[in-house]
Image 1 (tube, helix red, strand yellow):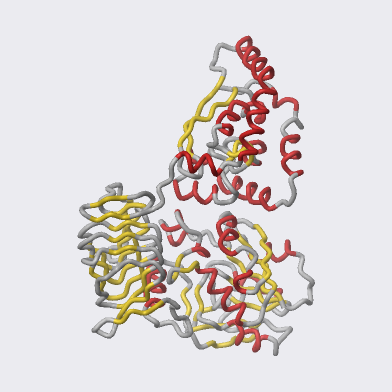
Image 2 (cartoon, helix red, strand yellow; image 1 turned 90 degrees about the vertical axis):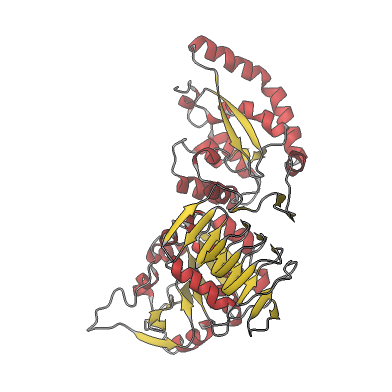
Amino acid sequence: MQAIILANRSGHELAPLDQYYCPALLPVGNRALIEYTLDDLSNAGITQVKLVLGPQAGDIEALLGKGERWGLDIDYFLCRADEPASEVIYRLQLTPEQPALLLRGDILRTPVIKAFIDFAKQFPKELVSARITGMPTGMIMLPGASANLDHLNWPLTAHPSATASKPQGVTLVLHGHQHHLDSLNDYLTANLNFASNRLARLKPQQRFQANENGGGCYLAQKVRFNGAANGQGMIGQCSQLDDNVRLDGDFVIGEHCLIDAGAQLSDSLVLPNTYVGRDLNLHRAIVCQRLLINLEHQGYISIEDASLIAPNRAAQHRQGMTFKANDINSTDINNRVRLSDRVLALALLLLTLPLQLAIGAYLTIQSKRPLVSSQDLTNNRGLGFRLKRWQVTNPLLASLPGLIQVFKGKLALFGNSPDCSADCSPADNGNLHGLGATVGLWGPVQLLLPNDAPLEEQQLVALSFNAEPGKLKYLRLIASCFAQPTRLSRASA
């Protein structure tokens, strides 16, 4: 039996966290949400998995790989965010009578998959659905549920195609806990419940350090904290807390976080790579880099004062406390662009020099408008640069001046579009650049799409291209730029 996991939620109900995470990647107990579903599938004896993903597929695939950690064989399938389950399953072209478990992978359940499969096998031609504490678990079995795929559309409803007087199929009541993560309150509660061992059969695996009050803290590797936790919670790896930090109630602190002296946290969640400043008092709050969400007042604010909260990106020395982090410099970035790319860029520059001189002369004769346009951009390692383009509509010819930046090591020759940094938020930019190895001069977004293409279309095109095997795809990409001769004309101003 194979499992088909839907992990294509947009997560808009979790705004503003949807700027940073898709639901499947939300950290719960310092692990991505999707990992708990894979744990449960592996324990149920399933090995074949089709994982249906939306625009952030590149980030998820980078985390999960082919599923080796779970003994799974994962195939990835792209779709639109929140695409109906019926449309996805139709395009998967499954064998009609082949048994398959279909489930959502972007909600949190305690281990229940094996119990559901064992029960559903007794009713192979019936719709079998499951509930925990009166709420649907987002699991059905094929082929019995083939006519009821709407049960997995988001948001989940108990029986979307049934009436109260005429319920459909067979319902299994499972014992356990679940969180749909359909609100910020539920997301915070899921984390605090996990850290406090209130979820049946889901328990943190880190070392537990008890305190005198009967509580304590689960500590991951390379955590620096010699203070006391008055409540119960967990701290992710490589995080550092000043000894004068006060931890009360329930709490979760993510990986690579820095908590400064005098800060107080109670019933709060600090997401990875976040700095919390000196003497800051957080209660029922979610902190994510510059974002502070107050669940007491149901509001949030993006803070620009780095002494309060900030992304943990570089070495910081704050009020007597020194933190170490990865300090990226231009030499390190240059080393990340392959030498072969830089050599090839130099060769192309020399070969195209006569052509570029001809383009400049042509544009000078055609118009007195600027010959080139320039744009200040940032690559995926945080280094700024200026990218120049000839003012012609053929995207390949227009990009030839950018070969200089490839030679300098600031761009790969092929990769994701650097243009997104000019139009998208930092979180969106990071997600898009995560779809491939690096930011590049040439790619399907740069060479095939118009400048005003929607971000979602750019992401899906980049994902599809990156998923293609072999090197011939690059030659086909270059050849496609000359498929329409009209694109050789001068670009409009």
